[in-house]
Amino acid sequence: MPLPDANKKSPRVYTNLQNKDLDNVTFANIQATGNPINVEEANEDELRRLVLVNLARLVTAGEWTGLLTAGGSGGDFNAELPGQDLDATGTDYDRYQVMQFPPWGTGTTYNNGLGKANVLFFPFLSPKDGALTEIGVNVSNDTVSAQNTFIGVYSDSGEGVPDTLLGFATFDSTDQSTQYDTSLSATITLERGVQYWLARGQSTAENCELYALSSTSNNLPVSPVDALTTSSNPMNALETVSTATSLPSTIDPDDLQPVLSGNGLRPLVTFKW
Image 1 (tube, helix red, strand yellow):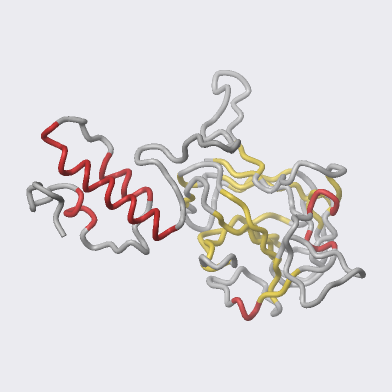
Image 2: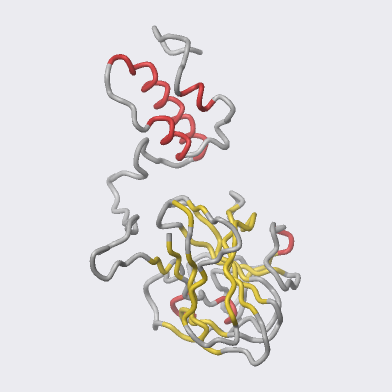
């Protein structure tokens, strides 16, 4: 149904978005279509169409994102992470420690390491838009034999489980040090405020420890369990039931289970855009 008294031809909004449906149109699509657009009478029809499409998208997605910049201030306090590098002329704080959450607890500890060839998954929200140029970790206890540790990023299925591998970094498990990988397996492009999954895997089952948050810092209020338990400590992590010596390209939720041991500690990982 056309807008009242509007020209039926849409040179911008409907032309650019005509092959998309409300289930897959994104904030980036809306932003690219509407930015820049002058606020003037000549653009009135296209401005109304842009607002209409974005409103329909938000109702469908159950979220709120502004037309030109994400988010807005409401009645409740909503802290956001900085979306740009800080102090570029000095220290240049251009890395984001995405796994250091929540902020309470007893600080860092050694990750128990996998000691097995399962893949672990940890949810996180991206603090920034764009493609990653680097992923960093600290190997706190190296292995004796040759082995690689993989840190990957997966999209979310929309149902709160990891879905598709976007790319990964590879680290030398025999090198006890802070390591940064700038040769990622693929271009990993993230959208600010969207949930993704960080994955940790290994090329063998030999134990390799990474610096991680302690179990006290690790737990979130909600963890999947099969029954009320007082003898185990559910983590805010999932793991594959099947073993794997590489990161799978896609994840079947039927191959996932909750992590009920110290293996679920959140590894300290940095991203750089």
